[in-house]
Length: 145
Image (tube, rainbow, N blue to C red; front, top):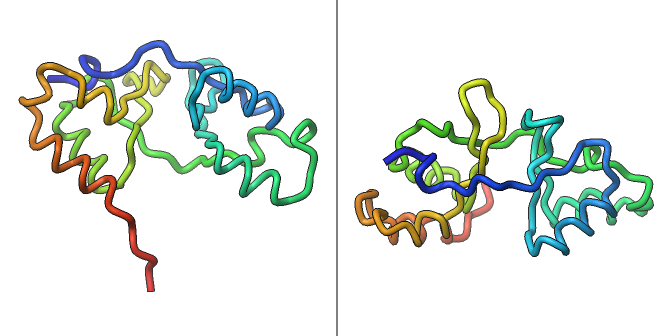
């Protein structure tokens, strides 16, 4: 099974020059805690509600004036749409992430895959130990010494 068979295709994005307030409003309206940051369909990073608070609000700057590019995470992981879903699940376990951006081979955003997408896929039993993956991803990480 390929990633394209389990991913969500309709993905809302935010531009890097949008304000943090606009991003927070979009997250609230969509009921999500993160948004891919894209210039057209080119993935530049991701912005989470935690990024807004820790990198934005904590600075004391105005969320109306502060831009998404100033708070987003640029170093993100992704999967290719034609990649094997089992391999993608293994990567999610190693990285301890609950979702990955999905790119085409030209590196344009084409979707998002989340643990929920995999867990509700009828053919998920074909993937290697979905329940184990959920448990490993959910395990709290330990601080590095």
